[in-house]
Structure formats: structure tokens, C-alpha cells
Length: 420
Image (cartoon, rainbow, N blue to C red; front, side, top):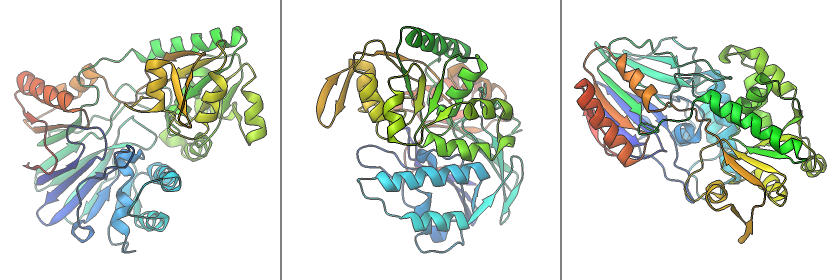
């Protein structure tokens, strides 16, 4: 078995890993790195691919998969859970709609991808020629998975994006992967400890009460898939006494997740939280609700588009209001500018934010200690590739793994081929 690193090498984004099992090629993820212009993973010829596995719906893992189906052929089986396919369609379709940049595929290619789909349950083996692919629950987003590939006595475990602590919305990752010969492990927070989830939850709810009790409105910009729903579940679990409002593409994600209760940690909590919120139906209501004491949850999480722009402009003008940032704020994004400078740039005009802005850690990724807990469970003496993090994080993590466990660990370069 050999693995070619197509993306996510010393960077977060455009994940892609090609596992070659003799003459069988299994592509694990094929995402995009969304900047001002999207950056794609290394090219692979579709005719050389025997199957593609999508670990989860986020665009940095799923967004470039439709490029494999430009010919209209459905010969390449796409493997994922049903929620992953439905959420991927939602996010990729939105990317196509709003893209002011070149994408080498159209929605018809997304349709072909979906026609090629093989919907798998967790732990349900799928044979690709003589190689076996199995998905394990990853705890990162609804339907998200880690991947095990087995061939001729060799076993590869690819974590994808993983969360072993779980959340209000999701169960913990399934780490029953047994002895392995190679691990591809994310390194996003390998050099950082995030705040305990309970502390973030409690402080967010307290902030919401502070804002509303002084007559203000709290806006919570959130990623449409998982984060918006997680925040709604947090407020419900804490018996929040005030009105909760949801808007934007999160509403479509609500509907998709609601169809798949078996993939949720607590389907009743989800149903109660999302069903008990007001779903904004149009602009007339949207313009009124910003003047009401309530919590508004809406994408985009980094304020790069969607109804979040309207809500930020409306909320930021009054100091009694609040903005709670619960999503990762990438460099150069409007959310990062708001967090660091208390400024917003709309239509090329810089404006001061008078609302109270606070950040709360709600990442769906493991912290440093939790990544090491995964490694503590490893049986065998595998090669380890540290990926999906910035360069220093991947390199330092690999060095620490070598020192602590004696594994052959390193941070690969894009295009590197590693023998298992």
C-alpha cells in the first residue's frame, strides 16, 4: 500500500489522500482551500480512481469531488454516509452559486456525483476490488467519519477531522481501529489546548443573558452545518429563557439533520432546540427581529457572506447589543477583523463596531491532549503522517510523536508518496 499526499500538507484545506493498493486507487477526500481564489488539491485522473471516500461535508474535504465526474460517467463509486452526501450537496451548491471565481465544474457534475453515491453506515465494510473500506464515527459533524482501508494485511487509519469528546449534538469519535500500519492524523490544534467545552457553553449563555437583560440583541454568526445547531442545543440544554432565532442556510441544514436522528447524540434535544427556535422566513421579519431582545444564530461563521452581513451591520451600531463569535476566524476574514480590531468593512467602508464582541471556543476538532489520547491507543508501530494544520503545528507534532512513541512520524509535503 502507498499513500500520495494531494493536499492538507502543512496547511488547513484542500484535503486529499490517494491510497494505492496494488492496482486499486482509493481517494480519501478531495476538498478546496477557500481563499479569495480557491486553491485545489493536486490533480488525479478520474480514470485512475476506483473509489472516492468523503469523510464529511465541509468544503475543505468535499468541495472538489465533483471535478471527478466531468465526463458524466458514474463509474467511480463515491462512499460516505447519507447525511454527508446531503450536506455536501447543500454546501457545494452554495459555493457554486456565490462563487465570483472559476470552478472547473457545475451543478450537473454534483448530480453525477450523487448518482454515483454508495451510502454507508458506520462500521459497514465496502469492498473496492480486494481492498476494504470502513467508516467510523468521527464526532466532528453530523455524518462525519474517519476511514480505515485494509489490503493484504496492511491497515491505514485516516482520522479526517475528529472530535473524541463529543458535544451536545454529536457522540464521541469511535476509536476502535485496532492494530494499524499507517495513521494520517489531523494536526489543527496539536499545539493548543482549547477551553473546556462546558466552560465555553456556560460563558456563552451568561453573555446572552447579560446582553438581553440590558435590552440588547445577541448575534451568533455560526457555520451552517453543525455549529449553528450545536449552539441552539447548548441554549436549550441550559434552559435559556429568551427567544432563539435561526436564519440563513442553517435552516436547510436543520431539515437535513432532522431527517437523520440516528446520527445525533440526542435526537430529542436537537428536535426541541431547533424546533423551538423561530425560523426567519423573509426580509420583513429579518429587519424587525434585530430590534428585539433575543439570540439570533445565522451563517456565515466568519461573516464572509449570507445573512450574517445584514445582522452584523444592524447589531454593531448599538453598544447594548452583542456579537458572540463561536466559529474559527480565518486570517483576512471579516470575522477576524471584527475580533481583532472591532471594525467591519462593508462595501469598502470601514465602520466601528459599538456592540460588545466576545469569542467562545466551540471547535469540532480535538485539542492537543485529545490528539495524544488517540495516539496512546495505537497498537503496532505505524508510520504517522501529521496533516491538516499549519506548517509549525504539523512539524512539531510529528517530532513529539517520534520522541514519545518512537513511531516513524513526519509532516509530509504535497505530492509526497509514502509506503505503508
